[in-house]
Image (cartoon, rainbow, N blue to C red; front, top):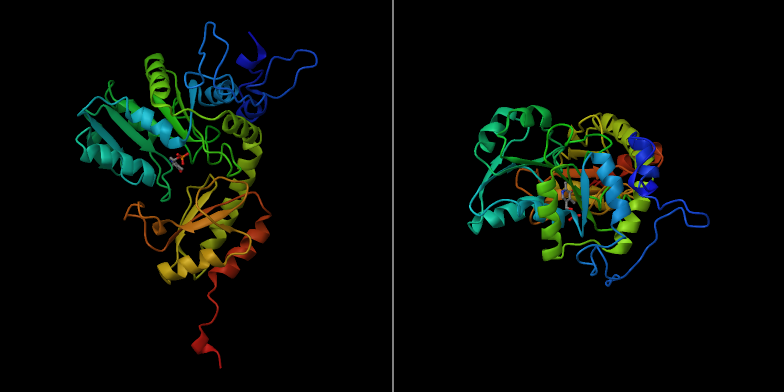
Length: 364
Ligand SMILES: *Cc1c(COP(=O)(O)O)cnc(C)c1O
């Protein structure tokens, strides 16, 4: 077996570093190359890069090992989710996390409105309600933790009781395979926006789907080829390069997030701090209101006022500034993606940004 197909360890901290490397031949590079090419020399495999490309393989090998299945890279997280939704037969029911990522909800709602699926949205924290909604459904779409409310699903209890024919898919973007492995918990399919903490540097749009079910794998692969939701060679390279440091980045960002979530809870300018105890995202509300929350996010000096999450740099934003954000997300909620900076610098920046300067009328 070539080394790139295997990995000397199953410990995720080693897999992120060691998986997906080229065969170690004397004089050859340690790293997978970036190979932009649309046409490949005809032979046994794909000869056009929409069908397959050697640049995808190292990243897919690593993600497959991490999640415990076979991985397919896509052009974005939404391209991976779209291929998953396409597994659902026309008119069938999809039960889904009511507070899933806004782009996911928007697509499911569009499909529902067009009569393609029957959508049942459900509180993902209520296992009994999830099972009720999933009864007879072709797909159960779980997101856990949810973006940005950080609600958790009990994936193992759900998969233990759900109907055999229901495909259970989990958006594992916020957890990563280093904190949660849904296939081991009984799910059929895992989807990631690898644009976030997996790639980790806010510079690559890429997604991945992982499954241990051969039928699902081959259907998704065929959908990827026919819809063209394929990743770029550079994006695969960037995502693999980012993955190499995922374990240390995540440990550091998580330690920062644990500390900051505890300290934020002590501030008068902050309420309702949400943090599941692990991970790199903290959400909280600003009791002074949406405008005050918006001003705070625009006032920070170190934490970037920006969307997306999971980069080495801390970012934050008021999620409801986006038109598609579900109304269940409070107007005054800020989602903070904690990076790997020095925690005291982040804390000082948070304190300064969250304290309103005195209004002009207060100045004498
Ligand atoms: C960003 C995000 C997506 C969408 O991924 P893209 O790579 O932006 O297409 C899906 N799910 C979650 C939880 C996300 O945060």
